[in-house]
View 1 (cartoon, one colour):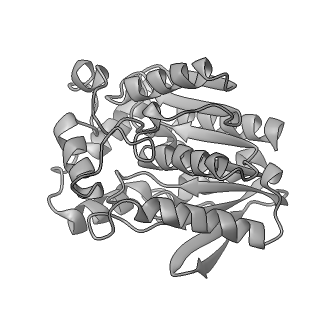
View 2 (cartoon, rainbow, N blue to C red):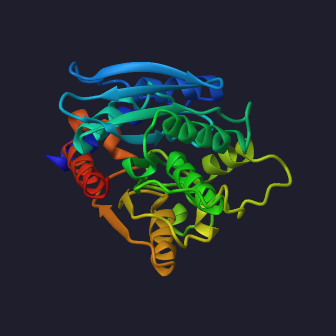
View 3 (tube, rainbow, N blue to C red):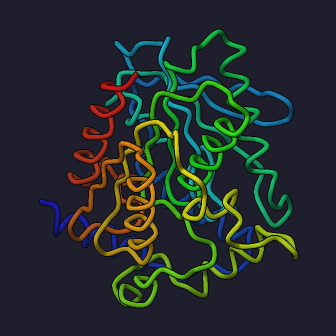
Length: 294
């Protein structure tokens, strides 16, 4: 069941040395993320808007008038539609909606605010397709979770209509790297370590950008007025405190927030849902959450 399966994922992730350089890191996340391909019944369609590539997906029986807009993880420096395709498409199936996965520009070639600009472009694209904001959920894992909140905050600040809900998987919410679990979970997290996060933050943020800027560290944002949020995080994650502290901050701001801490799970574990029962269970719960709010 769950423990033996997550041990197999750990073995997979530790089977090769951590790659060096952005090209190799991007190749590696694509490799491990796409080990189990998308299901045969998923329909995919590539689109492009303003130089930003994206991919529609839909499972049989899903409602095309409702959409999950998804931003992949990878520390703003790696990750892709390919690496997260299985995660995104099965989340759409669980929610009974179409999905739009966005290939936002990556650092260090394209530092902040490129990713946020592309997220806003993707949002406008959905509205141009005739979709109502109330029929859109926004979600992401890791850096994509932080980007999700940054987008929703930007929409609120612009007094725009907000999405129906937000879904955050293992979100990276604090680029100041002040979470205590970066130390306490360091030896059991196979993926995320403080020095690695520091390197990613350095690549994403140009000199002079405050790392507590709420546009990059939503833990420090004014969260009032946000739509309902679901946060899913594993107990074995170095970023556990990023999720728990953000959930507390959202709750203090009167946001309807649900925090799920999954025992023994690692960073972004639903990516391996094809062979990980807790990954499928997490997606089923996220799908039910989105159905309630869309």
